[in-house]
Amino acid sequence: MLFFELNRSGCKTYLLACQETGCGVLIDPVRERIDRYLGVLAYHRVRLELIIDTHTHADHRSGIWELRDLTGARVVMHRRAPAPHIDIHVDDGAQLEVGRLKLGFLFTPGHSPDSMCILSEGRVFTGDTLMIRGTGRADIAGGDAGEQYDSITRKLFTLSDGTMVFPAHDYRGHTSSTIGEEKRLNPRLAGRTRAAYIDLMNNLHLALPDKIQEALQANESAIDDDSLKFPSLAQLNEVRQLAPAEVYQRIASAAPPLILDVRENDEYNGELGHIAGSVLVPLKELSARAQEFAGSRSAEVIAICRAGVRSTTAAAILTGLGFEHVYNMRGGMLDWVDAGLPVERSNS
Image (cartoon, rainbow, N blue to C red; front, side, top):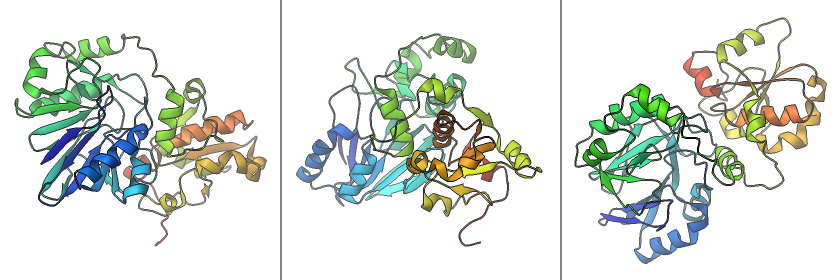
């Protein structure tokens, strides 16, 4: 197996390739380094087959979509990833092959709702879930310190002690660790209870990443368009949320709301289907097309997407445009389908 860390910086991108078949996978590519990745692939004659983000990044723009366009490789993220245009969604226990290499996936929420780790050839690529002598923050993008503690202690720490750990970030000069070392030496985890870990993580008072708006919301939506002004985090936090069951009840009421689905057309007619009577307006078109439903400015509007993330952005945009009663459906169509609520699909 060929194995390289390609960035030589605090953000880590890993290349794994099967020497027998020449097939490879990139993990957590950074958009600004795409030329370097293409050069390394060409030099080693690696055919890129999979591009994986371990989670939705908040501190840099992902390179997954540009690399797919340039190489034809398929993009892989967890089922809970909010972005469109993901070729393969995986869940806990899933396995994929790249040439002779086998990749196993662990769902490890906590840093973000879609965080996962990847197992291959005695290595675990831990994203921002577990760092070397640290852990990823759990205070943005739907993070949850308790979930993170459970992901680390109940999943990662059940791996063999010799499993090598390769995180998505390191700013202290480390290159790798092992599960055994992190059990013994990680100051955030060693000897610390779940409650103590939550207290620690909730009181770190870390500054937000630079340009978080440009990175996080762009990665969540796969929109690279300066004409779309993303709402601030404060505006997003003000969006009112409804659970799918509440949305279902309101749809059945005497005065049903406007259900605005802001996914892409292929998602609307895809595996998750859509809510009957919903109106499709992709997020990137929302501001320009808001006049089409201006009659609902004083009525109830509920925004819908895959995981409830893009639709939170949509709800904030509509509120800023003067719509008075806007809500977001928490958990999106993923939670709607998981709850067994009715959907329409293109083949139904």
